[in-house]
Image 1: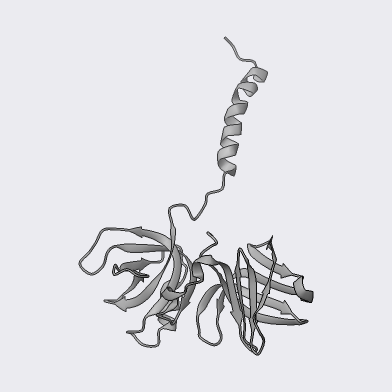
Image 2: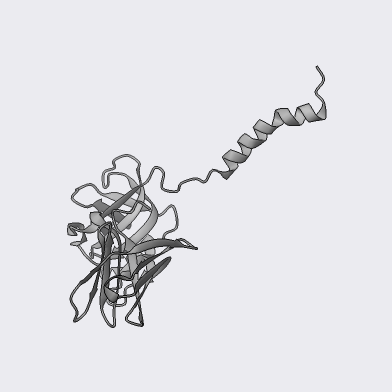
Length: 224
């Protein structure tokens, strides 16, 4: 049977539609990865990651160019210093004589000179945390609301509305208790001026007619 141009086009339409659907389907960069927290240390010319509450150690492989190797080298004052790292990645490879495989790092959330961050009891409940200095301020947000802490003032619990903004950022706003509070965060490398800690979000708090700068990171209750 000879297909006319119209019949041929009709027959091919489902194929075109299928190709278009496949082309438009975005790939999730988080597939196959896990968010992990742990301790970083240098040994034998390699950077090793020890997950919180574990004894296993994995060689860091920065497959996504997050800069974690250079950031760790800059933050560690001495060769034996240990750092806390919060990353997203994938464990690969087999156990070796000096390690238990590799950690392919895809995203760096935070890096700080601390060995006690694994003990943070609030991390898993938080969706976002941000803080800054001069004057000191801190915000912890969760599914129950947010708490604004400022030097010399009592903690201020508030409900909030969360909205996404272009570029991958977020805003948290509240009009409760006669307070107009806005917290803006954007995906940008940010360094805490007091500790040198590296965060993956730049933060801006607008409160009492003032704009305060700082850094932030997603908490364990947000899976991105």
